[in-house]
Length: 287
Image (cartoon, rainbow, N blue to C red; front, side):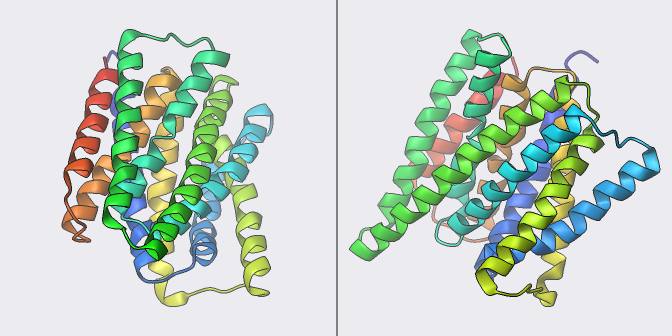
């Protein structure tokens, strides 16, 4: 099937979206981000190891090292993403966060000589407009001085999370073209993510804390993230990062719908128009 990697990227998108919904549920329950990431990694690492050993597909080399590098950037990206979700609507925060693929695609075009087509230029332009509309949506909802200060904090943490996620997407592509299989890259990532989660929690709490009653949220987040990452890495073997990463990270379409219908977040024209621009970008990138 021609361009079948687009279908794989779309499946990755859906799993990422479901994962972001779980992050928002955890934030609404008041679960600190550093504690939630511990509960996620205790499922993620064993899954990667078991699958790798069972399939004899773990190979140590350059791709594995790329996976370890991605583990560092992804951990802090998810940490700041979870923090921003505690003060912002998921239907606003997730779209901006996932728009980080603009950075991934730009790095792939500049350093990997991937083609810069008219469709991609138009898609990136739409995504910039979408980001401005969605961020203005935060300011529309918060007028009080204290609330504006909170909004500024949300934007700062979201900006850090987005840049780190964009770098992570580019590292995935480097690992894929270096000849590594998806499981090797995932395992390398998990081996770094695991100790970082525990070190961060100990630094904050001076002890390791497991919130057992929310363990199921950690399992679901790990499951959706694992599937989303695996499918993304598979797609990157066969297609350009400047197309695949953007489609995969369009998971915010799923998340935004959940935010409106599940979390009863406000529907404002800025939000609707911003999401419409994002969907238009998906269509252009798939050309």
